[in-house]
Length: 464
Image (cartoon, rainbow, N blue to C red; front, top):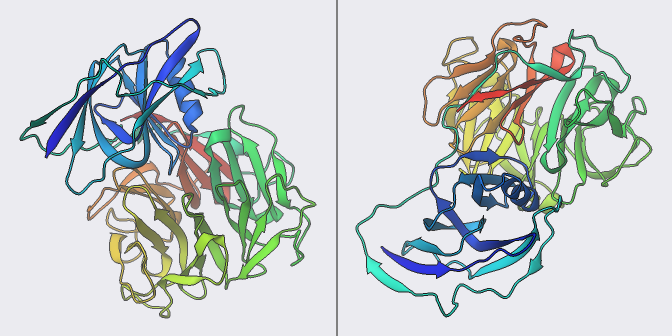
């Protein structure tokens, strides 16, 4: 192992801030703030608007995550990280130590761009600055240092126990106007626009609404045309997700199908049929590849549509109803963690467990039980009708534990979980009634579809 040291010169002038950028590398250090589902330009604007408090950031394009760092560094340690960028500002000279491992490829050369400090969109133009300027020196030294890795901002975060109702009825009353819900199930968080998309099951429609000024009035972006299997109808909308181009995918259990709506769709828009699927439940889209994972409840199978097209392949299950590690029993939720663990996670309701499968799994692949598997119950090592899952940057699992009316966190390799919110049934701010979907917003807050209370709850992040 060796370090390569070099100096990168950047300057500021007038009302502009010169931004240094090194692609396929990240800063190793203590993170002061993390943002999720955010564009690179928005992250840069966040750094600039801090008035010097924040001067360096890592941006991960595969999952639109931003890590911000305090102070102006004079020397930093970086590490190769594919599809990531190290961006910094207001440095007259930075000494950069690159942690190079034999198994890693050489990162791409650095580049710079000039951004207006008063711009809200952080548009950029190229600059001819180079890391190999005449004042740059380069040396090579041998060291016995250990490998450095990034540290997530929160290892075991906590949230307020009292939620805010951001959509629907705080009292749990169902309804059909554009401020109410009826038995919502699936949910997708559109981070760059800070909007939620919800499968409003009872009203046979897909709604979109803003979180920036909640509670807000929703817009119908699909369905709302009654029961039926016409392409503008959704008799049983369950799973929802956007692909990388903003197209909407919906699993419709009423017509046993997966359909796609174009970006900008409304209640009059006809969908395109992607495929027939037996009793499709929740769906997940890999934003890097646009592969779509769809749960088939009756077939006890997880299907994968490669690049959102063609005939599906089996990614898990498909071996009948059972409790073997290559079998599922009434699956409902699916999550493919393409950034941190490269693994597929499935909520296996009939077996009261969460199974984890390696990347590229097939019907022949056995999963690993990573939560539950100890019979249906309310114990710390049990689940009761697990509905959906989400994974954080530490590999921890968050589970919407339906019949236990709680959100459970299972740490990586743990044998039991802890309740982070909920735990009793009711309509109070600290209660849930059959939570369906759990997600994080870009601030790390928990978003929960509280199905039988006909509402969407937000639990504020309070501590890391």
